[in-house]
Image 1 (tube, rainbow, N blue to C red):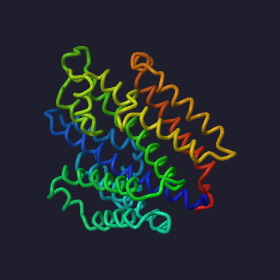
Image 2: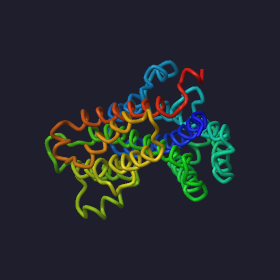
Image 3: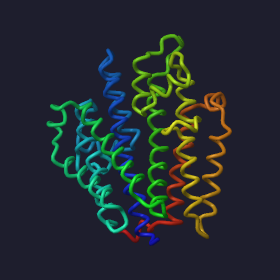
Length: 315
């Protein structure tokens, strides 16, 4: 497969997944903002969304204060923000358009229809219709795109590059959501003070609430949430599950120059496969997740170097 085609497929899937995960992050932050708390605490949660995506400079160039309305406008519908849901859906569609001969007609129609509908919605319309409804729409459109891909695309190299992009992006975003929310919700001193509603909102943000109840059948605890979202290999949004898929996809598309990238992903996969939640928490969850996200970034760079179009050729 041409590296340029692989590049478009890889980033088409990453931007689609990124839009969904951003909707999930904003949704859980919005739900938590509805819980009685001080204005300062609420605004701190919204600031975490900006910091999590390394967008402080771009945000403060437009807004003087951090609050729910400003952050939501910036992260949902701001065309100048390359990381907004609006921009992600546009970029997913543009990458799909560049490889229309490779994707199926159903895939193209789904991505194109998503973008056409997204660009017609102003922020005011989204708020008036219900902000939660919009997040559900984004998640549903992403699921529809994913289902159309699985149901119509030949499972050749194109499929593996799409799957690789999806799972790499999902792993990164699950780690980000867990990192920012764990420390907000972690009780100080009294373990019994854990707020069931807020932990439930976190689990729902990654479609894991029902899974948690099925697996543990007990009260929600930070340790078990961490175990579920990091180490369970049968949880579709866990880091372990994602890396299972990443290593399989890389094995299918391996070439003569990808040995080091395969070695790095193998090391990361082994850490998840044989890891224990007690060791992760003893090391420090924030430190562990920061290291994981750094390694995901390096994997992305390695994949770009081994398979995709170098960034300087796209300028």
